Image (cartoon, rainbow, N blue to C red; front, side, top):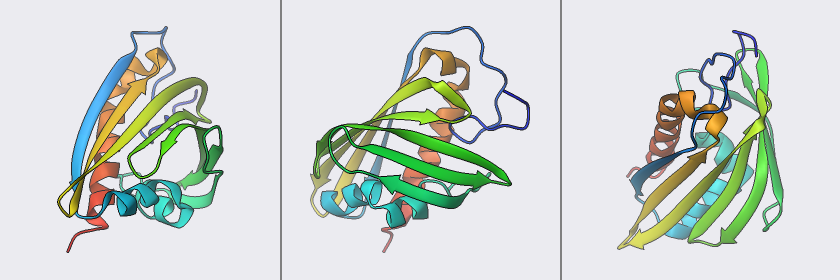
Length: 164
């Protein structure tokens, strides 16, 4: 990996070190929407592009968003980060609409590092509590803080879409 490449979570990264230990990151966010509305924003390409890749200091420009929404279906998101195209892809491992979404996550900058993301949606009154769990590949242990920052930013960007 060269110094001008971005990691799978849009932060500059050093070359991969020997595997550390697998790490789990837990985040939560309250969203001012029904669980179905919040869930849809994780699966419908026009919504994904509007919050997932534009919420960081290194804002990305969506090149293409493709997904096959079903268990075993795949997704492929191509994003331009200041002239560098990064492909994020994975497979939908579990799909319990509108309660739970589990998927694998890889990036073209580190194609052999696969993480697992679980998004749980719990409706509380007229709002939804999003609980996000990221099981980070052991090879990405040194990037855990950057990963947490990126996903925290993403969750905040999603919640901002539903501000009144």
